[in-house]
Amino acid sequence: MFTPHRVLAIGFASLILVGALLLSMPFAGARGQHTTFVDALFTATSAICVTGLITVDTATHYSLWGKSIILLLIQMGGLGYITLATMMFMLFNKQLNIKDKLNIQEGVNQYNLADLGSFVKYIVKFTFLIEGLATLILTSHWSREFPIKEAFGQALFHCVSAFCNAGFSTFSNNLSNYVTDVVVNLTITSLIIIGGLGFIVINELYNSRRWKKISVHTRIAVKVTAWLLLVGTVVILILEYNNPAIMAALPLDQKILISYFQAVTPRTAGFNTVNIGWLQPATLFFVIILMFIGASPGGTGGGIKTTTFGLMIASVMATLRGKYQVNMYNRRIPGEIIRKSFVLTLVSLSLVILVTTGLAMIEKGDFLRILFEVVSAFGTVGLSAVPAGTLSLAGYFSDLGKLLLVITMYFGRVGPLTLGIALMEAKGTELFSYAEEKVLIG
Image (cartoon, rainbow, N blue to C red; front, side, top):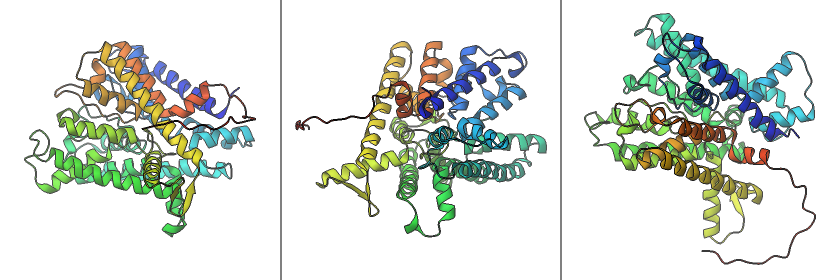
C-alpha cells in the first residue's frame, strides 16, 4: 500500500536516480571529464538531499549543463518533490483528494489538512521571492568582480544553494575568498537561517503580530535556533581565537564574522569561508553536535531538528524536577510527541554509529574526520573536515564508502522515522494492554 510515508520515500529515491542518470551523461561533464555512475549518484543524492558533499569539484568537473542539472536538483530537493507535484496538480486544475492531501501533509510537515493548497502556493512564492531578492544583492555586489552575466549566474547558484541549505558552490574553494566580505557573509547566512527555520515558522512569524499568539512549535524553533547560533558563535570564537591557520592574526570584528559564519553553516548548509580541516579537534567535535541537531521541521535542512532537541531538553528538565508532564509556554506537550523525539534521536544516533563503524573498518583516515563526514551526510550539511590541501574526504573514499554516505544522506533527508514507518508494515490498532510492571533503570 502506498502510504504517505512510502510515497515520500519512493519519490525522493526516484528523483535521485533520474538525477544520477543525467549527471552521468557526457554533456553534463566539462570537456575531457568523465563522471562515473557512483560519483553521479553521490552528487545527485547530495543535491536532492540538499547536502553539499562532493566527490568531484563542482566548479571544474561539470559543464554548464551539469551545473544547471545540479541547481535544478537542489531546488527540487529544497522545496520537496511533494510540493512540486502539488503545484502541477493545481496547474492542471486537478482537485486534491484526501489521499493527495495526506501525502502533501507528510511532505511539507504541516499540522493539518486545512487549506494545504494555499500553503504549498505560499511555499513556492516565498522561496522564489527570497532567492530572487538575494540574487539581486549578490549580483550587484559581484558585478564589481565578474562580468554581469557571470555575476548573475554565480549569485543565482549560491542563493538557491544557500536558501535550500545545500552548500554547493561553483567556486573550487567554496567561499574562502570572501572570508571577511560582510555582504557575502550576511546574505548567505540570512538565506541559510530563513530556509532552515521552516516555512511553517516563517509563515506564522509573518502573519502574527504578537509573540504570545505564536504557537509553541514556532517559539521552540526560533528560541533553540537563536541559542544555537549565539552559543555556536561564542564557542567557535573561543576555541579558534588563537588558531594561526584560521583567525589568530585578524582583528576582533573579523574573528566574530568568521565564527558567526561557521556557527550558521552547520545548521545543514555546508558553506565554509575557512578550511574546516584546519579547525581544532575540539571545534570539530562541537560542530558535529551542531550538525546532528540541524535545522527546524518543514524547512530545507536536515538533522534531528531544533524542536526535537528542545523537547528532549525540556523533558529531561521536567524529569529532574520530579514532574510527569512536559509543559512549555503554558501548554502541555503530548507524551507521544516526547516519545517520538527520543526515538528519532536514538534511531539517528544508531545510524551514525553504524555507518561510522563501517567506514572506519573499510577506509583509511582519522576517526574524528570520518565521524564528521558521516554526521555531515546524515544532517544533510555538506561540510567536510578534509586535511589541508585536499578537495573532500568523500572524494577519497572507495565506491563502497561513497555508497554508505549516499544511504546516510538519503536517510537524513527523508527522515529516519518516515523511512522506518515506510518500510514497516502497520500492525493495526492495539485492542488491549498488558499489566504494568516497573523496571529498574539508572
